[in-house]
Image (cartoon, rainbow, N blue to C red):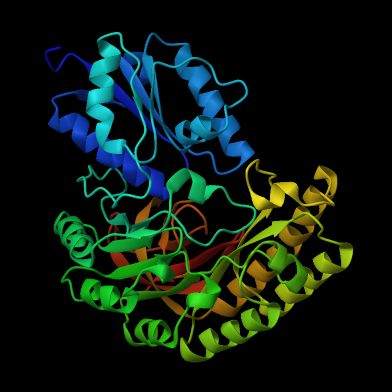
Length: 434
């Protein structure tokens, strides 16, 4: 069919920042092909829904989004992890859609849209072992902050996780391609880069990559998501400690602290390893802020295992934690484990971690009072009449904000020094040093 500007395509991005990047790549391809794009499916001829399927709740959220779009006249292409999941295990309740794009074929979006408009049903699945596509992207986030995916897939094979099945094995991008993308983003006004992968510490030359990125003029901060404990090397620690542009913030998914549970999770470290790592990081990177994720109610987790987790968290005083009740996933090794924990107990244990964590956050904010933080301004809250932004200690969307006063106007994207003097419902508070 002939392309013209009257054809509109809506693209809905769901899930993690890595999914957002794939959505931005599809947007670029659609624009290059001459399609008009919109965020409103009711205005669109075709809607591409780029989904997450990591856990059951994500799949349900994707289904709700599909049903919502079905209320419009738009045709629907299901893309991303739920499309890949459905190929492996048919999703209960998934309605009929007009096409599928798996995680390995984002670059087929134009052909898929054309096929749907021609009344065909495209089914686009690729080889998940192939190199990561270097398709350009149309940056849609805040103009001063951008994520960069440095690798695709995962080789860790944690017993509870379906990511390797949905995204394939770990495949790093070439270093020169990452640096080239970073220079382009910074040239467009980005001053904070966030490097993402399922496991950034598996990247073969991470310290060297960080050195190259920090050498780019205009970059103010680079942040790392996610670092696996057993692969945080002394060389990486030294690089972070020596380079002021690297955020003193490390997101290290630990998941548990009971050796028995860690082994069942197929995590390759012990509680003692975690304690040694935390002490080393705090000694060698002064002021480092740690973030982690915790799973409660993993199969076989006993009361003693959970109490050991609480004792570890009380000792570690990690200020940033995401805690999740275990989600049983078909096709994972953990799905076949005996002694599955009831949903009620999972949620009870999740809540106990959250209560402990609220006290840790309060103590963290008290300790920060009197300190000066360099903050990237993100906006102004007209309700509380305060500006807000993020320091090294706050990653976008997961860690809250710093609210502050300023005698002079501040615009989004501006970097300011803030004297911290308190907290507002868990968020930092302070005043700008003029």
